[in-house]
Length: 73
Image 1 (cartoon, rainbow, N blue to C red):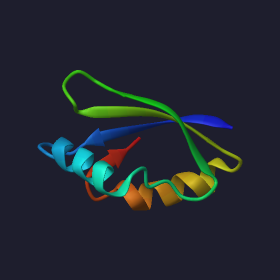
Image 2 (image 1 turned 90 degrees about the vertical axis):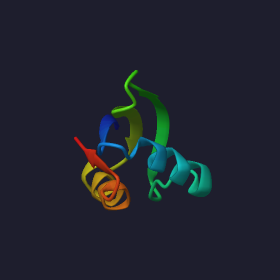
Image 3 (image 1 turned 90 degrees about the horizontal axis):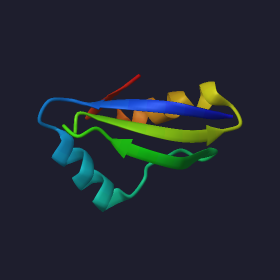
Image 4 (image 1 turned 30 degrees about the vertical axis):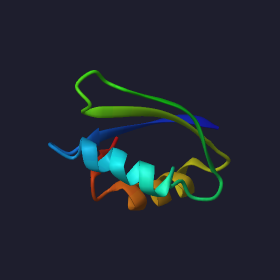
């Protein structure tokens, strides 16, 4: 199943998001596969296409990983 994750970076935290990505890589739980992503021109939101067999389980795990520096929609 493909689905879109929209991360809204908290104000002033985009640099932290990218620093964390450089240091840790993509922190996706097992069973969740990254397909593609893009960021809006203001670096406020990141749109990600993800793939998983079970959406509910994987999205919950993804939210726990990201929630400190970005909000998921």
